[in-house]
Image 1: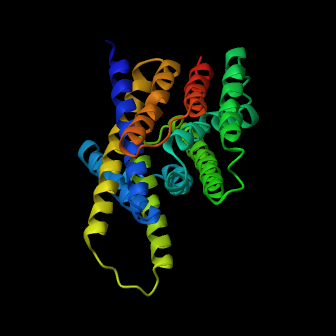
Image 2: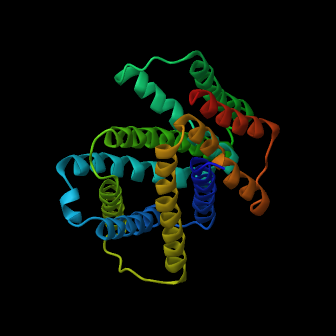
Length: 294
């Protein structure tokens, strides 16, 4: 088996478990700001530790372009993660994660509009499949939107779409950074430092005047955040390795199946309903990424 395939398979599993940990933390009712705050801190520490170990003058890698790209990437990643946690508190994983995969559609749309990239015939079919995800989920929930439970579900759907939009902007910033000579590890470290500072600021504003108290739930949230951060940093490194040693289209197609892991685990552990239409949405989400990568 070729190295890029091994990197992609491991990255797919890691991101699958990462997204399930987001679901598990949401099910436990943990605060989204606090969770993403720990994720940002853990990834930043790992990135700067790696930078310090691999570069003779690590701080010189934090150039102005790196900091500018990191500012936008950190903001979009933080907002996207907060929206994803909020969506998972309101809607099943089988709805949230296929909708979250619409970020690929948004990235391609940005490429068509701002980078003058012309879509190929199969990519057009991929765009249609991506829109089909939204259509299938809307079809399934159309009768429930007027009920109290349906209102919460609608909120989850809208937050999942907002998460997809923010993730697509984060991916676009990453694409611009990747095309520059800037240090990628420094970029990751700076980005997640900003995620940490952004969510810390939100936490201080929301809990203003309250004394911080470390208890069992706080410790549990910290464990969730650190585990997600470790999987995020390792998985992203493997993704970069796969993109650097093999075909990006095939790697992305395989990587898209990572959404199956949190959906299956949520069905097994939280007894979430997996209706035929939700299965169809998952299939369309994966198919859309495959077609758009061809």
